[in-house]
Every structure is written in structure tokens, then in C-alpha cells.
Length: 261
Image (cartoon, rainbow, N blue to C red; front, side, top):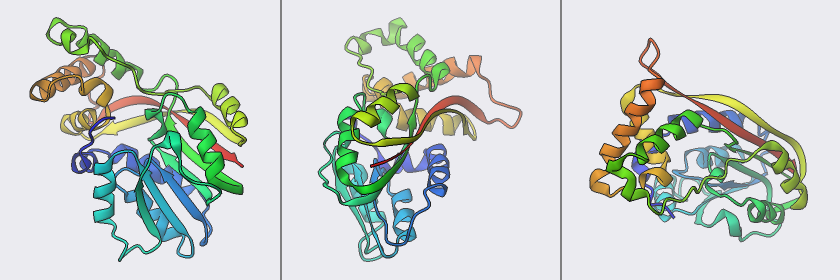
């Protein structure tokens, strides 16, 4: 797995947080819901979930021990008695009919094979329970990925990527509907949606590249990684310059999923 820096992520994940809140607004929680947040990251949204279910319980899981430790320290049990953070793998969820709601934002595209994930969600939900999730979808960040691919093919970086492996799972809606059904979940809405990821300036854009694109950045030795990220940023901005306000835009595709057990 990749090594995450929770503090750095927290500073450079404004776009993910904005979309997480959009997803949260449509969740229509009940005060006694029991909620599982898959890929809770730094815990900001998970803590909000806990505040919205004062009679219920929220469990936030993440594969990163660093993220779990950071989230637990920021949102301690003494202040959030109905909130718990656990280290867990989305592919092997250790729950059986414990939750009425599963929520996940900007996390599941880190998994290529979603069959085990969806089977685990179906097991984790109580009968009649529901999931609402958003992740990167087919075609997301195509221009940025093209910039990464151009730079990693250059002589200065080619040797670092001899064993490069694509680890993102950017899936289409049709396949996802089928996988939901195979897992025992009834699809209610599965849709690809175009979204604009906006960064306030070059510094924010580079911070996002550093914290959210590990498959492309982790192969480069730490002492050269900043130079590589700068080269990718320059390549991207050459074809996608900032707007009049200095903001940098990245065209993203999000896969939104709603289903019931």
C-alpha cells in the first residue's frame, strides 16, 4: 500500500472535501442510523456523520494506519462517543449486518476489483440498508494522466517506472450496475458525472498531485519526487493554463452509486 501523510493530505484535499459534503447532503440520515464510512481518511467527514446520528453510531475505516491514527487523535472518543476509527481493508470488510448506511467518497477508486468490496458492503448492511458512494469513474482526469504518462516516459524518469503498475479502478456505470446485482445489492442510481476539480493556485495543485496521485509519484525516489511532480505540473499547465483568477482546473469524472440491500 502507499504511505500517506495525513497532515499534508488534510491541507491539500479541499476538492475531495467539497464533493464529500455534496454527497453527505443527499444522504438523508436518521438520528439512530449506524453508518460505515469506507476510506475515512483524516476523519473530517466521518466526524460530521457522527454528529448527524446522535442516537446511532459511526465507524470510519481506512487501510492507512497513519490516517487512522491522525483521525482518532483529531476526533477523540471523549468528544465523539458514538464515533470509532478502525484500520481495515475495503476488500475484506469484517462486518456482518451491523450498519443501516454505508458511505464512501473518493476512496474506492483505489481498488481495482470491486467484487469483494461490494460483497463486503452487502454483508455489512442490515436488510433494507443502503449505500451512497462516489469515486473516480471511467475517463477521470484524462488530461492529467496524459501529462503523467508523457513525463514518466522521458529519459530522466524512465528507469523509475520500469515496474510501474496502474492501481486505480476507474469503472463505468454499466459494469457497476452488474457488480452490484451480483453482490446482492439493488442499484437505485449508478451514474457517471463530469466534475471540475478547482485548485486555487499552482501551489495547491502541486500539493494535490503530491498527496493524491501515489501510483505515479511513489516510484520516484523521495529526493527527486518534487522535481518529478513539478515537471508533471508544468506539462499539464502547458495545455491547461490557469483561468483569469489564477485557478487551475482538472476535468474529472465521478461515478455516483446508490443501492440497497
